[in-house]
Image (cartoon, rainbow, N blue to C red; front, side, top):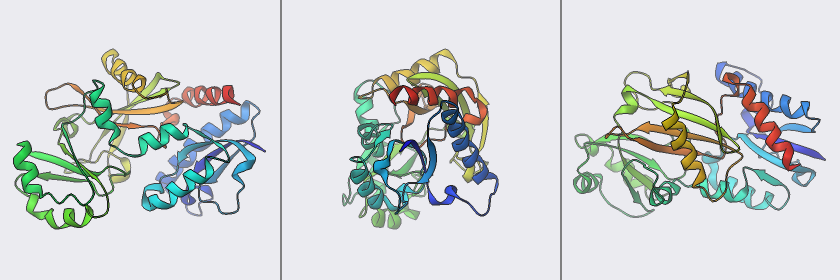
Length: 296
């Protein structure tokens, strides 16, 4: 019986080639495993798609680097539904299901959380980008699926070049729901702040800055990540976001930007498999391990 399975994907369970990015992933997962091991827990790192693994033989499964789930979302959804009866998830199944679809942002907005102005476009709702720009009067917007990760099918579009994206949008909307959001200009100049919270409390933060000519801040898209010391206002905003969830997640990353009115705005609430930058603040891995041990 395993106390904890740290969930990863096939690329990181036993990689044959290790580049700088893979090494980061391995370091993060191993830091958490080390802290859990020190607490005397039986822990392994396992690809969530492992066919011959008996999930009933583990008490908890924690999502860490399952960064291929959005590439085959149907497979992942089926696995999630089947496996929830065999083990307990961290974060919980209910939190994961809620956080999987970015429509949760609209729910948080109703609770007073500031987000980018957003239009939800349902699957097979054939509305031209031209009309979306006419209706919103925005100069620039970001188009992205409601279920996605790693900037998959995410486009920065303006009222001057939307014709270049009409055909691809027509094809994509047949497959899934999309969000059309006003583009936050400060993400180019000031970047995106990621605050990490363990047990609902702030531990540390990073700032992610896109490479020149891009708006995607992820380091695998050429963005740069640096240590950031969040101020009181930013921490309070992040904690407010977490406190408006249906339950306090054991771990969370709150991605925020300053909007076009220079107000704090929630970009995304990452509660499934966010990078948590344990390597920048190793105490946070220890804190998470302690929170997990309280459940076992």
